[in-house]
Image (tube, rainbow, N blue to C red; front, side):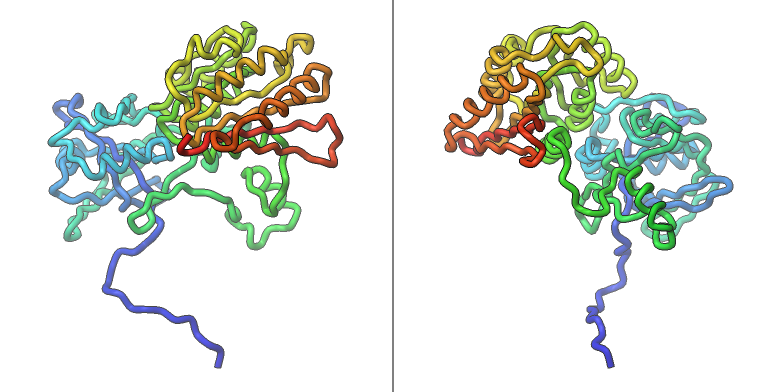
Amino acid sequence: MEESTAYRQIPPTTLLSPAPVVLVSCAEAARPENRNLITVAWTGTVNTKPPMVSVSVKPSRYSYGMIADSGEFVVNLVDENLCRAADYCGVRSGRDVNKAEEMNLRWRPAEGMRAAPALEGAPVSLSCRVRKHMELGSHTMFIGEVVAASVREDLMDEEGGIRLERAGLVAYNHGLYQRLGETLGFFGYAVSRPEVYARRMEQAGARPVFELKSARYQAAEILRAALRPGDRVIDATMGNGHDTAMLCSLVGPEGHVDAFDIQPAALKATEERLARLGFSARAALHQAGHQEISQYVTAPVKASVFNLGWLPGGDHTVTTRTETTLSAVRQAAELLLPLGVLVICVYPGHPEGRREKAALEQWLASLPPRRFNVLAQSFLNAGPDAPVCYTAQRQPHS
C-alpha cells in the first residue's frame, strides 16, 4: 500500500480559509447621516440571476440594526491601502467612535441605495438590498440582491475589462491579513491550449516562468516591496505621470507624493492622469527642477525615484543634466528614512545619459557602507548603452 498523508483531527470549526475581507457600509434609514463601517470576513456569493451576496453579522454589532432597519448595505472590497482601516473597523464599535473619521476615510453616494453609502477608494463597491435574512445562531445572514456595482477606474482596461489582479486585494487567512499575489492560472487553464495559456497569463500580468526584466521593471518591483500605505515619497522626474500614479497607488490615501518637473506638458499630463484615477489629493505637483527638492520637501521620505532622460513623446533636446541630477540625488539621499530607498533609472544611450551614468556611479560608489547599501542592475550582455537601475538603501541604524 502507498503511504497515506497524515492528518490531525481538531474540534469542528469554520476554518474556511482564505476568506475575502470586505468593509460593509450601512446607515440608518431615518437618519442617513448616521453611517457606519463593519469589517466582515464571513461573506460569499449566493446567486447569479439575480446577483446575490451574503454577509453574516452578530446581532450585538452596531451595524446589525442599521442593516435590518434600512434593508440595504454596500459591500466594499479591501485592498492593501484599506487593510489597516479594515482591521480597525473590525475591532472598534461605531457606538463609541466615528470609524470613518478616525481612519480618514471618505464616503461617496452608492447607486441604488436610499441610505447606505459607498466607500471612496474601494476597488469595488456592491450596492445590496436585503432580500432575506436567516438567524443561524451566533450570526444572522443577510442575503442581498446586488442592484448596482462600481469598479475603480484604474482597474478597467482599454477594452472595458475588469483587472482585479491590479488591485492588491486582501484576504483573511486564519487570523492574518494577506495580500493576494502571484497568478497561478485562470478559469479553464487546466484544459487550455498552450498558446492560449501563454497569452492569458501574459494579459494577467503573470509570469509563468522566471524572467529577467528591464531596469524600469526592477525599479517598480523594488518600490512595491519597500513602500507601505501612509508613506511619503518623491518622484523627482514626473514625466507623463506613470511613476507618480504608481507611487500614489502604493502610498494610499494617507500617504503623499511630491513630484517635480520643469516642463508644463509634464505637469498637465500628470495632473490629468491622477484626476482620472482619483489620486489628485495624494500628490503635490511642482513645476521646478529636482535640484530644488529641499526647498519643497523637508520631512523625511521613504523613497525617492529618478527616471532620467527626456520626457517620453517630448523634445529630446530637453533632458536631465548631470550637474542638476547629482545635486538632486544628494538632497534626496539626505531625506531618506532608515530603510528608505533611492531608486534611479539612467539611460546611457545618448551623450548626456552617458555622463549621468559615469557621475552617478562615481558618487554612489563613494557612499559609506555604514550608511547605505548600493545595488546596480543591468544586462551585462546588452552593451554599454543598456539602461541601469541603481538602488541605494539607507542602513536601518544610520
